[in-house]
Each structure stands twice: as structure tokens, then as C-alpha cells.
Amino acid sequence: MKPFIFQVVGYQNRGKTTFVTNLIKKLREAKLETAVLKHHGHGGKPDITGTKDSNKHFLAGAAASLVEGDGTIELLGNFRGSAPITELIQLLCLFLPDVILIEGYKQEDFPKVILIKEESDLPLLERLTNVKAAVAWPECLDRTRNHASVPVFPLDSDQFITWFLEQI
Image (cartoon, rainbow, N blue to C red):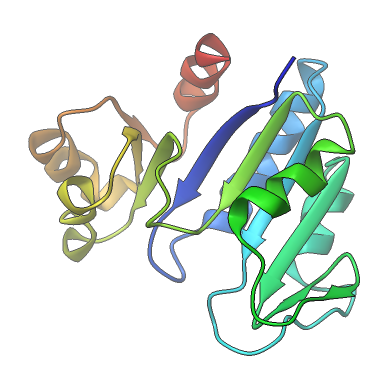
């Protein structure tokens, strides 16, 4: 059985890591094992200290957490060049997750949710492929609902997790 793969995307500082961490906890409560692939989108190699996002994912209960940036993965390994996302997903499959959450990699074509914090984020709803839902911050919820052709959920509710579990 293949894991269910789903992306969480949005611009920088939109709450993706917090959202993914909360989602991992809810999936764990539902007895689903989760692995996370995070794109290190800030340039350079990932910082592998214990205070970074991937460690937060792991502490939240992810079976594995992997960060890739500038040809380095934080599951300690080095590639010449960069690893294709398909190979990183294959690596995570070794941990036998029920769900693989991908944080970032906006341009990939996996099913995804977009986090919307500001009106300037709304064009992502048309620009990105395979968008299945949006989660909006309270100050942008109404504008997102008016703009989106997919289900829109408030950031501060469990409505998204209920919907997400139905998708799995």
C-alpha cells in the first residue's frame, strides 16, 4: 500500500511548519504514521541543529523527517547536485508511513493545501497545480473564500483535519 502524499505550501513565514506539526499530531491521534519532506527554500545547506523545523516534525511524532537543501539532506547524506523529489519520497517510504507530508516544493504536482495569510498570497490559488484546499488566516478568510474554487478552511479550527482524514 502506497503512502498518501500531500503538500503544504505557501510563502515564507505563513505558518507552514506549525501547521504541519499540528497535522502530524492529529494524524498520530488517528493512528496514522507520518513522514515529512521539507524543502529548505532559504538557500544553502540545511542547519542540522536540534532546534530547526525538521526536529520539530520529529518531536511531534513523525516517523521520519527529511530536509533537503543545496544538495544536502538532513538525514545525513550528501548528493552531487540535488536529489529529485521522487527519490526523497522513496527514501521516506523506507519508514513505512501511512502519510507523507511535503512542506514546500510549491511547483510539484502532488495534491496540496495552500496557506493564505495575506491578499498577496491569493494568486497562488491559480498559479499552482493540484490545489485541493486552502487554509486561511482569520484576517484573510473571507477574501480567500471569495477567490478560491477549492474548499477553504479557517486556520484556527479543526475543519481542515476532518476534511483531510476523509481524503485519506
